[in-house]
Length: 96
Image 1 (cartoon, one colour):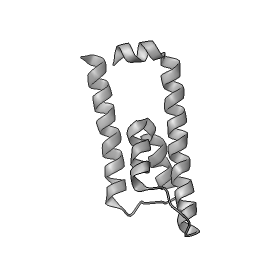
Image 2: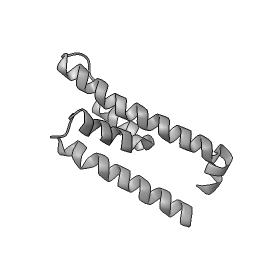
Image 3: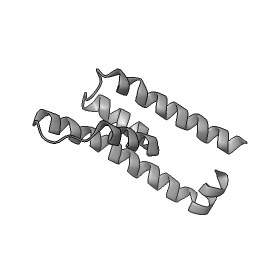
């Protein structure tokens, strides 16, 4: 993991994380807007995919900011669990 981050560059990793979290935040807002308009929705797997790719903070922030999917245990438990799992895996990889 350290080698990957070093080869990509710490600043590029930080930029990626900022961008993917912004994407996650706005994906929740757009999906909420589409739900109100009865329009085509962003699939739940896509929202979880954004979270799995490092956008968990933004996705969770969007979920509560827009009050979207907050009554679904799959989201209120699943997304934070995924973020915690990612943090544990990254910390483990960095210290091993």
